[in-house]
Amino acid sequence: MPAAYSDIRKGYDYYNNQQKGLGKRFESVIKDTLAKIQKMPFSASMAYGDTRYKVVAKFPYIILYRIQENVIFIAHVFNTYQQPVY
Picture 1: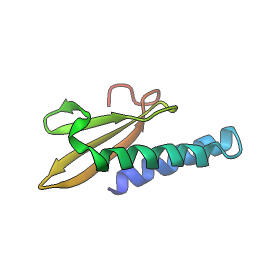
Picture 2: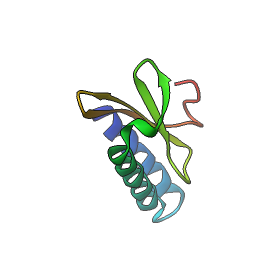
Picture 3: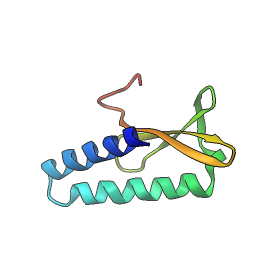
Picture 4: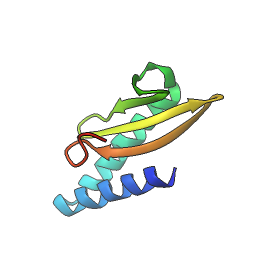
């Protein structure tokens, strides 16, 4: 999950540079989305293969993840404006 941590950190830094406190709001929304994934991991749409995606509310981000043997692996948290064909 190091790539996902890096993705979140970049988003946090970007939004903090845009407006004070916005990075914290971004982080909170990401945490809420991750909690929803944890609670109902099979409810998100399929992206490709066994990879699912969950759209993040209020920010142009998507979380890509896989489920293997009841473990959720977060692959990436990416900005759809910067990486629309990821």
